[in-house]
Length: 470
Image 1 (cartoon, one colour):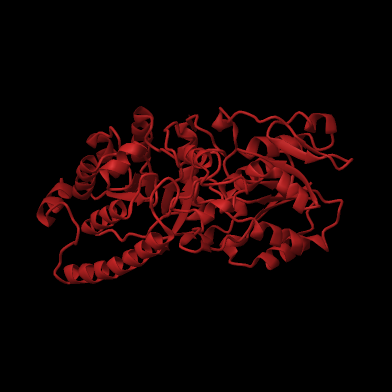
Image 2 (cartoon, rainbow, N blue to C red):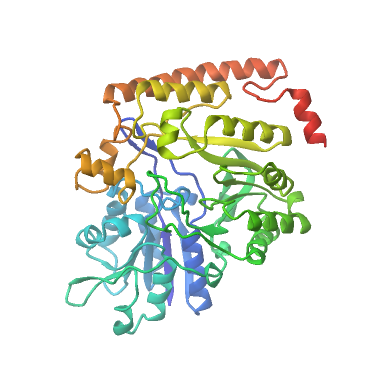
């Protein structure tokens, strides 16, 4: 059986002041499904239209020309832990372009966050849609192909929805997040245009994402966990190392982003992984970044991460306002500055994320964050809070009557203005202020570079050089 997996082009989403961009990262789950299909004797192909830079219409044309026996379409933003872009229009545009020339005998399957949140809407709008995988996609999709010719078995696959021959829509019960990540095959990187993926900060560096764990148990009110859940699950270290070495040796990758939601949650495992990377000589071939919480982090762990090749940790500081930090249960500013200073000394960048318009935010608290980030030499691109469905902050907004039941798109109308006193005028002013301050920051940084210094550094040049030399 020939199966085509489509990762569509993801254009920047802009509505008013809200802006979501999508980096060109591998469709990791699609590559895992493709590998599983190959193991089962199927012929799998991946059309990563986002990486190829082609339009939605051309994506549909290539899908038609490929003439697969089945098509699997993903609605995910692969650089954002399956966060949904609050827009169904690109999905419908693809299937409208496909409709006139797509044979009814070829099943269409959709997976991703849009399928998970609003499956009935997709079935109603896409007549050719026969199957839909909800939540974590690999298990239901591979089970579907295993049971392809057995309707009785299909009816028992959890996290699967389907259109029965009568036309009725059936939703099988939800499943549990996959406990044994090692049961999944290594992604089929050989089916991807690996030469197209580049480090976003330096397009000369061949790049890949790697996922060594899934799930995050932390109670962040804004975090969308509908795809991977809260249960923390890990892949075995030998399999992670095998994947890194494959990427380096076969695909020439020199920079990796560990796309785990909380990379260092298990300190012992983190240390073991880093020690194996060092023992295998990977730091000489590969540098990497990760995302994690720094609460309770030991400096010895940061030191080990750096020796293992880590060059940057992204962390969810989100705000520099103590009042808002207390509400979202994040790292306080003093601890963050201590970690950032230590990172500077050892050559490990500690980069804070930001969210504007959290519950309780005011114009003053956002400006407090803007000034803080700029003192550190960090441009402040306002990331307005989207109260995604199924998150605690979305539920609170519904209870207050700030958001209705209109669907995913409705949240973009309230981005940055849920649970706080910010007005539309405030949001526009803040956007303008951020742009103005960022221009001033670029000028300061150029002047400081001309002077041979680093603007925003917490550590004197001589102390940083001495520490790195050790």
